[in-house]
Figure 1 (cartoon, rainbow, N blue to C red):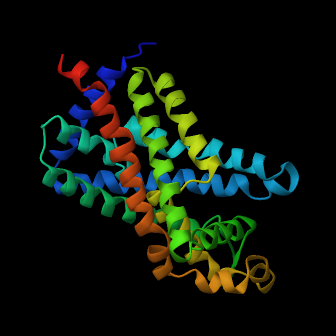
Figure 2: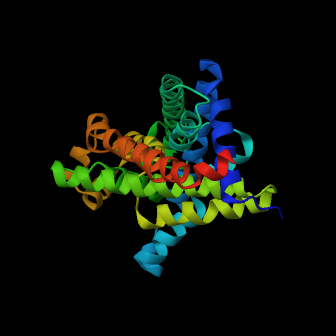
Figure 3: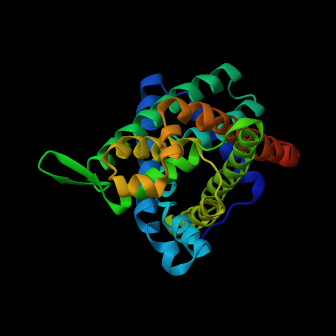
Length: 287
């Protein structure tokens, strides 16, 4: 295995950011669509694998299971060249710090990739909501155990209420993208596929198991629950709670989660990774 030193990694990030910002808008959108779907695939797998786990192995082990399978999404993204907004919160600013792109180009990349991520996540959420999350008999759809888990996850993610709740979501989002971009740095550190996979896996497992908030993952988690909640039985409604279900709407998806989580993710990637590493290794990179 070949491992690159920190200054080389940071320089590679800036060069990659320049290439990303140079893509035409349609390509940013298309690559963003793929990344949104891939993150959703990892989130869907995590939903299935965590179902029923806590009752037998405990809450901590259930979180570990959830985190252990989720990284498949980012692994696919890194190895296949898709565009993830949370990663671009580090890549593009690093290119701007190196004076390779303008901040207008950074914003342009963020907007198109964000929209692409949203579309990809929504498409996969729909596919899951008419697939594994429900059992269809004739014209009637009933939520499966996996569907119930999806709704419970979604209801929990829109439960951030008031200033303190939103501040909590914001802080969780900072921690999340701090780890996500460290995972990407570790992925760049190695040249071989196994090294990249191992480097990506541990930080992503840590962020998911810790309960942090990722805006693109939530673009899948919350819509998957929203699209499935109509298929809940009366007993399943009691399990989730009528009040929590009433609070689970397309509006609260944005106001109680995705807007503030997006801002936190930007801070985590831009400030806690891109800026700090640029300042730390600027002289080494220039040398």
